[in-house]
Length: 414
Image (cartoon, rainbow, N blue to C red; front, side, top):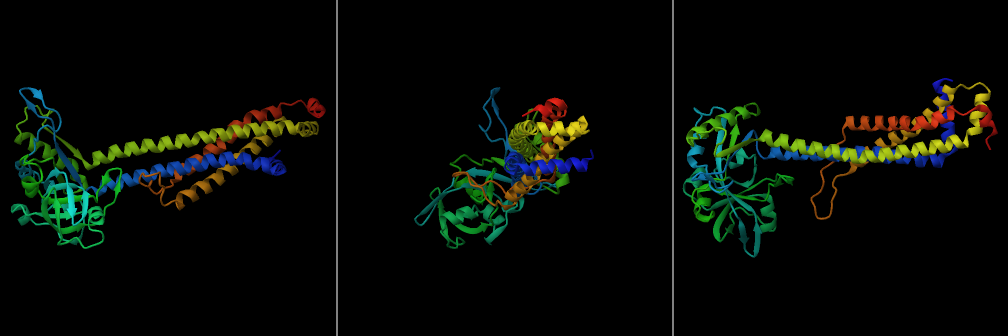
């Protein structure tokens, strides 16, 4: 018997029991659709996190203070600032660090803000006039404060879009006076929106001159620097810039053991690699969970094919009596099983792809919306291949059972 003849017989068998065939295919449809959709959600999350990392700035290296020691006893991470303005000045020396465009200090302070009868909380950052350039913020209205503002400790502030929306209630914030921790500041500009995701809300920010933060907002802790942010000349020179910064700080801090410095560095690529690994694991986990439903659908196919073999025992006996070989019967029922799984897989691809492309926002209670799913062709091909393979695997036993029936016993079957 040819494959074409086997396909015709399999199709006729499926049409003879349309409802049963449809319900069997539904199990495969749900499994394939779930795999495609959940993998697409994982891919979307990965892309969104990568975009968030890129939005932190272009070609960035972060320097953080590490643990300090007093009398040979470690005081713990963050117990003392090991970064100073002298470090920033040295890192901005192009003769020592040719791959560094600029380095900016960052000082963090709490930001209880009030304007008229409105109040809001946003992390307040003290930095220099280069903050927007290094951290890839665009100015929406007004302007960034200047180097003169940093020198003179001017009480000016640039705020993010979340602060604008929640504090000013639709009014133009530029020129308005707000209080941050009871100190009056003038809003000189606003940042364009960058959005929020797993890395936090980048619009809920307020940036002031670092000298102003030291004088008015950090609670008298002196010229504390919580981190130094370095911008490399290009993506290709990030590692070189990180090495240059490390060597400069090791010399300045007179670190005896380079393997145990009083600071740590982390590049943007390091963050991207870590987040990509996490989201990749999440994608695989989601796909594996969805694949369980494919196995359940395969068991359904086996069950239905066993019922089909039982119902068509006399037909099998007649076909064998008129000359059908064992392999003909085996091929017929295998193809019937694979047609069930293949059609279910194709319908699952269509439904999963359609749902993934139509979803623009998924809300889970009060949590932020999930990212736009991104369908990948490899996941589609893999899901379809697995569905056909499941049809073959779970169809072998029923087909072999049908092929092994003795013609005389099959003809006697009632």
